[in-house]
Length: 409
Image (cartoon, rainbow, N blue to C red; front, top):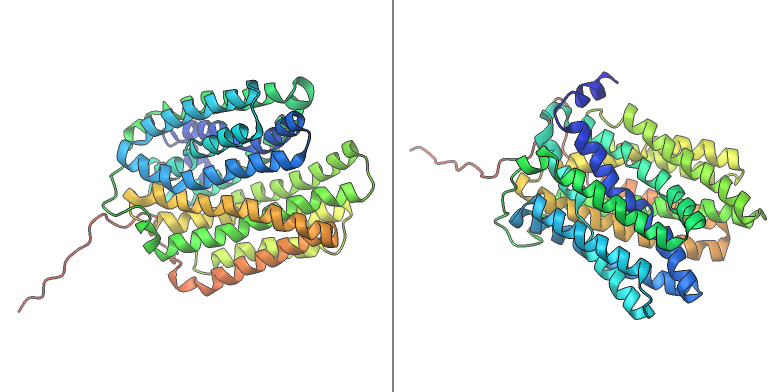
């Protein structure tokens, strides 16, 4: 664990890590607050689903696009502009009374103007620490982001239930504005100068590793969404009242995230082999598959905690794969594509998990999660030839220019 103490001693690391978590914290809150806010306004969950879908589509489009724009205009201008616009749009949805079409349109704009904090910070990390510490930093980031998905929904539900969804949306906007400002004003953000890519938009997909990280990430995150749907349905279907069932599902999901946090700290920083990604996904698969045996709260908690040990390490592996194979000028766009794949995974996992619940009950969603994880593991095994072997190597992007060999006669 001393490696994390060494990270904390690097100038700027703690501030960047904490500030970017605060800037991203609203995204652990927004889905549930928007769901509740729109349902209260229009009286049905179908309207809420339309609004959330519009936001997801906009956010998926913005991922690679905003990463590309940062390469042209710089991190600070793009992060500042998107933070201000997105915050204003959240306040508009909170305070204005509009027809559903208008609300969906504003939600789509919220997605499009989502501050690209994740691609920015993962592009920034290689410039913050020596290359030998980069794997540990990616692991720490992947572990720390579990705080967003554990505390975010809790804060969202508490604020919305106590003070209303309007206040909840304004609180999320406040986190975005203040956390974003703290992150944007970090000296490290101003010190990093991104080179504009010389290739057309989307050319970064010529890297097999970007395609691998995007596609594996899509299936992996889809499984997480299906698990969450299954856990929530398990206690709703077991006949508990809404409050009690919510507590039980909250405990199970918190332990799932807790396993990820522990696994990230213990495993995520270890040197990667080409098979490491498949192994880490396999750990999650064993836990999720084992959860099919029983929907007892303590059984689910134990198995998902054990499965969670592989979650953050798998996310760290995806970051390592991109960081070690993509030129620095193209990493922001590359992480944007990876993020887009994960957003698609969230939507697909929730949709197929919901269908499976209607057909087979709560176990149906967990079965979907296990099958999707199996696909992710097989895909990572099938693409091992392109996954870098980082054993004994430092993680650093390839040079911006290649060398030309001139034969001497």
